[in-house]
Length: 595
Image (cartoon, rainbow, N blue to C red; front, side, top):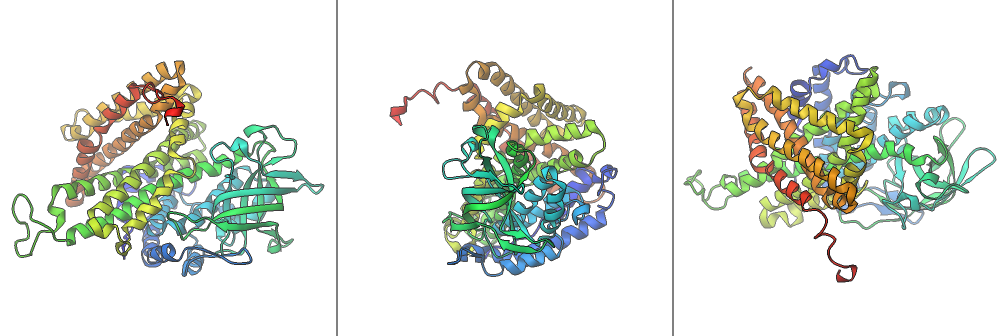
């Protein structure tokens, strides 16, 4: 059975030595996040994830969720008790608004918790993750009445939340939504339609489930301009806020999936269910985008989380499995063979995963810090810059981290050889579970198109200029330090290639949009390499300073991992640039009938 140990020390290094969260004590909640408190919170979270959630991961995969004859769903053995322990511990409300029962601590602390939970048990993590997304959407767009009724129960975990977008005939193109909303005299709406692929659509973890549903009010304009967002609870709230009568919404079936079996992915039927409008009529996508963007960042985190737990188990196996001798001579002559970790190709696989994980974790926490600034700063300029960062980096984090995260679970499986292909060691579950992250919340090709088509030109390219300027400034600042050259020189080359790719797309993509579309995925990956490389420069700088203060061994290891990233992973930037500049001609050359 696979094991998991939460990377508490890694997170503490990032929070205290790289991002210096104490410098943001002017933001609400940050003054309370002292190093002692953060360390204690992360330590307790680690225990819960390692001791409670990780052992349930294989249970959830084997048992799956079961739909009963009455339409109710039973989650795998242990999930309900674990969820109760999770909510009673206050973990769901870690960074939620205090006025509705949350603890108000920084979002980046909640993101660190989310990584631990997802690494330990991805299917379990999705239940709470969707509830947190519902909280964000209602907090941003709900009326005072809806907030007062739903937010305290969602934040406490007493009730759960979901997101209902997809229908049989529409996924990415939400303008094709057919679910109807008929206005009633009392101000409510009757919601009728079918939603599919609804994670956590029905379960036994909470007595009520609050569905956020996209639907079209009768007479609304066609396309995305006529979509509204509604709160549709499983049980109608009673006058005292408790669970009341059953609403006309139910689970028609559970999807048979490749992975994440412990999460109930449901077909949901709405048969004139009572719902309440969230925000303005016909502006539901704007309201839902709050939840969607939260979800996209969370899905990017899933790529990192599965990569991390897969790495931990692959590294442990490589140190234990004996096969062959090191090419430079036996390293363990007292044993029948050397452990496979002595072999360069095994090291290549492990270092590839490790170098990604450390940079990806930094990128996630850096972006979580920007989210805190965007939502908590009193400085309008700071908020705007942070919002620009979130808009630009969200598709990159979702697309790049899930793509590489899946690839890394496959690499980790490869380390196990044939033992990785059988269920006993758990590696094949990591591969299966990680695969969905590249698909849902907007397939990665859509993320790339969003980056190139919408995020780059927005506000005259303001967000992009700020990002490029920050990276260039960091390189320039470290130019005089020869010890930083192994990190800054490769990053500088990749940054120049990203700038060249941006110029090429601007010149050729306008004349022929197919050029932009054909190069979008490579552009997103190139952007991701630069972002991850920038994180390595920040970490290398912090590691150098920390090594000088006596923590030499771990910091030296970190610097070596960063050099591996720059020497063995960063050079892919040139290939991405070459593919972008090749344009769309060969991609679009074949006639339709040739396929």
